[in-house]
Amino acid sequence: MPTAIIIGVGPSAGLGATLCRHSAQVGLHVFAGGRTPTQLEQTQREIEATGGNCTPVVTDVTEEEQVQALIELAEQSGQIELAIYNAGNNYSGNFLEMEVSLFEQAWRVGTLGGFLFAREVLRRMAPRNRGTLIFTGASASLRGKPGFVPFTAAKAGLRAMSQSLAREFQPQGIHIAHVVIDGIINGDRIHNRAPALVEQLGEQGMLQLDDIASAYLFLHSQPRSAWTHELDLRTFCENF
Ligand SMILES: NC(=O)c1ccc[n+]([C@@H]2O[C@H](COP(=O)([O-])OP(=O)(O)OC[C@H]3O[C@@H](n4cnc5c(N)ncnc54)[C@H](OP(=O)(O)O)[C@@H]3O)[C@@H](O)[C@H]2O)c1
Image (tube, rainbow, N blue to C red):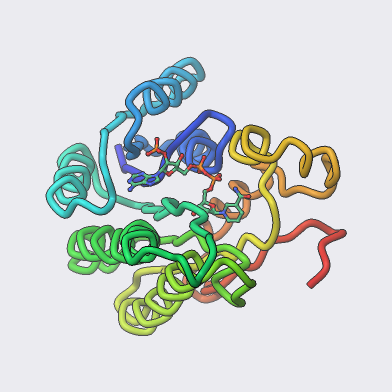
């Protein structure tokens, strides 16, 4: 059975878990990577309840050996057809008082992890000239807002890397895409951290999880004569 690897899988109402469910629906055996076992197991239960296959693998994307082990496990099970780098936390703070460690942590999760993941995935995909590799971006991938230096630097770096990889590996038959999520996702993160903002935006002011995941699976289904490298997603009422 061909496999999909999604790294950066958190709560059920989050993008990583939603991408796992959508990937399972198209017949891929999903390898779900994240740091919290209970959340990964919840995704496994949800996928298995609908007849799909999911293997949870506790993985920190900033740890080279853990990323290598995840990808090797998936590849041993079946050819990796789809790989999605979804990890990324929104680091911000007062710049003048910012510790180096905060900036470095944002870079480790947002950029270095993307490098480790992409390198291991492409080592498997390139020899067979086949596969899709997608990176999750944010508004910060394109523009820096005040207070968000670490997150912006990390996401812009990830985007730049995805372009470089696309130019190197698309001619070898690997579809590489970067998705700019330009707005707030209607998921656990915002409901837990900023319920007042949820109230203010309302349902229609946030991107819906299933709609985002459908766009990723559309990218994966594109024929090689018409590949998208970058897709930007926002609600109809977002200013941009
Ligand atoms: N939420 C938004 O409004 C929004 C907007 C624009 C873009 N985005 C982007 O969309 C992506 C997903 O965001 P989301 O809010 O929906 O979160 P999510 O997909 O529900 O969860 C992402 C998960 O990644 C995991 N993660 C973080 N650091 C990790 C690490 N070092 N190794 C492995 N896993 C790690 C975290 O789970 P554990 O802590 O359990 O490991 C986190 O829950 C991110 O790249 C984010 O930047 C989000």
